[in-house]
Image: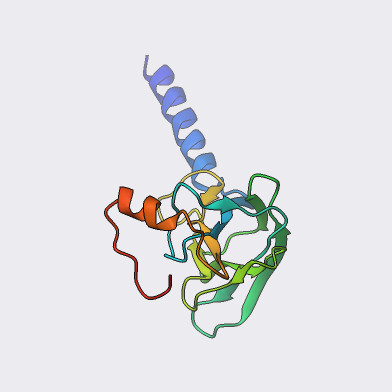
Length: 162
């Protein structure tokens, strides 16, 4: 009986040791890019996904801001992107940035809102290799004529950007 308990204990310890060192060599960062048709800096029911928008993910060392990893990608027809990040980036700050919109009528960015931070490490309590970034956007040159009605529906009072 003691041998069986010892064997089971040894197997459990080996299994846990394997899990402790099991960090993915890749992370998939997913998100979407949309056109802010009402120029309110959030999605509304008439916001439009942007196909072929260019995004870039950069990871920089937290201490010295040195670029440690960078990858570019583009959105699909649904406005979604999927970027593959190689390696563990525990000592880095990683951010996805909108780079370019293919739409001439929707290419303005807002300073401070053109980036979404993502965590690309297993060492913060997050499991698995999938990371979701906050939505990113470009603003339309001129607000859509339907915006007043849409914003009234959600009791939002538009600011001077409209």
